[in-house]
Image (cartoon, rainbow, N blue to C red; front, side, top):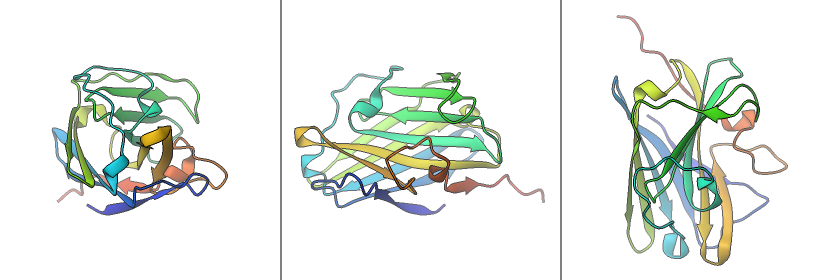
Length: 180
């Protein structure tokens, strides 16, 4: 699968973060495994450990996200993953409308690993939680640095302001398996 060099929104530049990359590592019948790599992370703020709990408002600090929608549809799902191991999953009926908790067969597994200047963040999400293939998706990140400074990273952005729900952020696609 392709690795995406996420772009920060031009309205809000990061302080020390030099790059954020994201990719799907594995997609099989049981799990979707995602990885984000944050470089220049010396001033990165990570939320304290919370355990595998469902929680709202994770995007208010460092948080990694997956947005996924069936091809050509208005319905979409938002998944939020925190380095604290907390997570959230929502369904939307259309752009920022009809938000409801998304049913999950089990909690995702969030695994942060931090070095001096890098954070690697892996997530294993049950495949049963995803929309049916094929689907369009976006990998995003809210990055908080010391002093409360936040930058917003995505494969693609709308021009005027950060908005991960916007259609422009659904810039990647997962194909359905081909019949052989």
